[in-house]
Length: 246
Image (cartoon, rainbow, N blue to C red; front, side):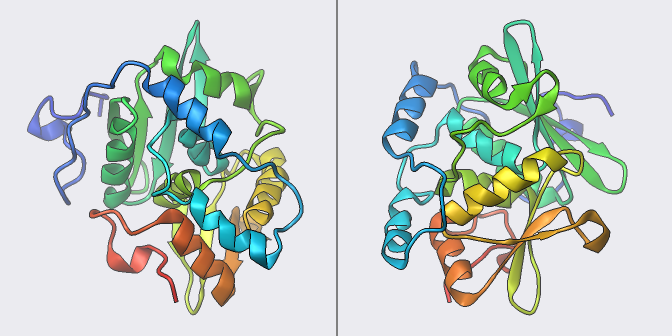
């Protein structure tokens, strides 16, 4: 199936579930203001937070700031990929369920980015943005040659975690949550784990042979913190796929 813009025709719509929002026109300066907000709300990676510091992290939750292009680093923490072409870049991610397509298209639209999708093997779907200069800073920060690496200052906010979870988060009974990683991004896994620990979400790395690669988040306190940081479930997400506060 060739890629086409959402809404071009009924055949080009995301998999039947809920109507996908139409991408809106970005307000002038959206990316610049989003970057500014990120810098003001940033926390540096480091050792696991104390209990008091952990309580403060709710202020960096998904509902504490406006959507910004910098939030898309959350997709790159997971299985997302970014590629450059000239002075532009494109972000893409493969997902395993139709509802994820709807959520990600809406999240990208809220940041002024239109997206297209196509079905891939194994009942999966690839979501892609267009090539745009807006994503050039993200690509510059994450790409070393063609290899994806998190920048030294990488940290996780609620909005970044929300995007990661929407793309590759899976509940794991009886009481856990898996955050999927890029299977070809082994050199990213350790620094991503450090960023999780710094956000009060220290997880266990699950190897590809054990159902990963992914980080497993367990424990009542950590799962409650994850739920607080990512906010309420998107309308398209089935109720049992999103973390809830205990």
